[in-house]
Image (cartoon, rainbow, N blue to C red; front, top):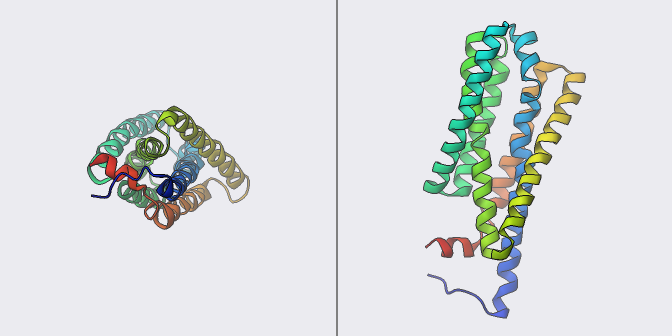
Length: 213
């Protein structure tokens, strides 16, 4: 086990690495969560105008999606506890990308879109607890007294993702139309996956790992 590096000679490198990890986590939030809101903001018109569902089926679809988000929240937290933040994030983002592809393929088929909504809801809303876990671990390693601040920054990043995704979705709807929203969502998720793989995994703070052991 590595010693607890508290000396002045070692503090700066560890702090810098942890700061990079925290920054990458914050950068992932808007990209990872924003993709969901590219589509979700326009879910009702997609279902009514593209899929052609009636009011009864629309209500069922929204209930299915809502229930799936609850399952996703619990699943994200459980999986993070078992295999770690970075691995869970990679797995979830791959699943989210696949979900967006399925949305694009199933958009015009009523029964298929109901199934896809459940899959998308699980992967899309597994992200918040995963991100929260990563931010809290980094904050505890770098500045234990600033955990609440880190939490607030994480919430702000999620809100940025929601507003940014909705804005991009609006521009897509004004241009190519409703059927193009899944492709914009895929772009968001791919960016988040790239950040996770290229930065997040390599910059996992050692202090977090030693603190957990």
